[in-house]
Image (cartoon, rainbow, N blue to C red; front, side, top):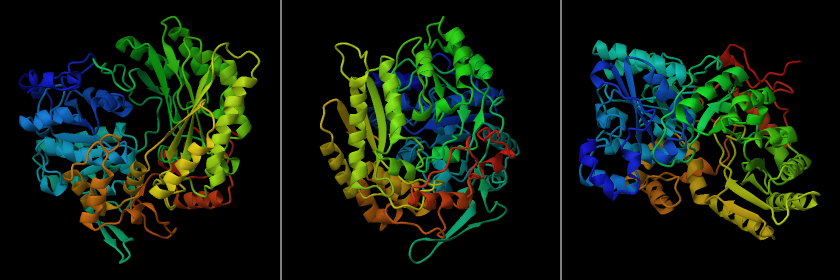
Length: 615
């Protein structure tokens, strides 16, 4: 396959994305393995190669002698054109073999706007896009990732979904598939048996009926499938598999560095944050294990930057001890430590000094809302004084640039809340000029990023209406007009892209026909502004007779059956309702280490949660 491409690749912009052979890539003899797994990332090589989940599962599957995992990415437009013109099917980078030759094709669904790319990749592989039309056991099309928590919009196209942590459920799925393949079992019986593995959801085994108003009447499990599917949870993060090597790309990727996951879950309970709920309970690794695995990773890959990955890195309970462990070898080796996802309320000068010991990097903080009232609504649990104090510490430590994240369109938001974003950013600018020893000849730069709030499943805001495109445009206009200095740089997300994300996030399986029609209308790479076509999507909704507003812009009642109610991520619905009611009163809930709120996530972890308060 790759020999056919050698001359053709000269005509595409980034040929290194399509040839494989990078250091760290795994090569095996295909005749010596029982299972071939194609890990498909439905975006470009530059983005997919930055994804930690792919790195973990790629190494994990390849640690088996009986299996070979290879990588597949969505080709950019110029490469897709070459492939279609020359009838070259989508292929894996390691072997160059067509996707159709694999036993299992696995997609990771990181973002709702990648759905048309999944269809496009299946079509490029010469495979039917509908699960019902792929009648043989091979290739089996599976999916996982955060978007699987509401799998319904993609139910027509995926044979089974893996919910939650992937390390253990993946191994059990491969074992079952190997058994079925060896005995010549059929696909239908395999899917029914696979549905008995905790963490596996087979949408074809569930029947959905609807009321006349379009809401769901019932979701009924068929055959022997469980009525409710539990997400899979890795209980012992300390001993779970973690790679000692990464594939090191030849070409530039988005995040080209060593990455180590220091803990899963989050203690905070921000009411807008889906990841903060679906990745519960909190599970931590010890500083010694993190340091040992990170050093192996840096030595094997040659990376000179190590990123400590989590939802809220400064909430790691032994952070100072961890940094001391890491600095004992990163300083002599001139390796920079990056600590993303810092919390404003527990960021101190000592931590800043430790992070600055190798070289300075930019600081980003998520304030989320411009007023205290709205920060209380979303349970951010930070004050304006903490925001300003943290900025002051950063400036005193030599930083001259700070980035602040906010959201527009949050529940109960008013014009005063929008103007509050500009006012708070101005106060941060003023802090720079109030420090006594500010750098001479340097000015301050405060970058404000304002994304659009999208209600997500398994959050207290899952019942809330999303702001319309028109409302978001007005909010963005008001925010721009409220900024009066060039020292504040504002970037806003496109409202029409956020609107589609909102539809897909809380959609049901009837949206499958819209996704298919949009793909036929030419939609793919919908998360890319230069590719996104709002008009093509509007046309698809009209062609299918489906209202986007029904999914995005209406308030749900607490007793409405939601498309994901038959999937259990451990978060009690009663807890989410309590949090939703507290949000209406701008009442906060303390973070988990102050007081356990009884969310229920520990029920999937044998009662254990590393976030539980110790008193």
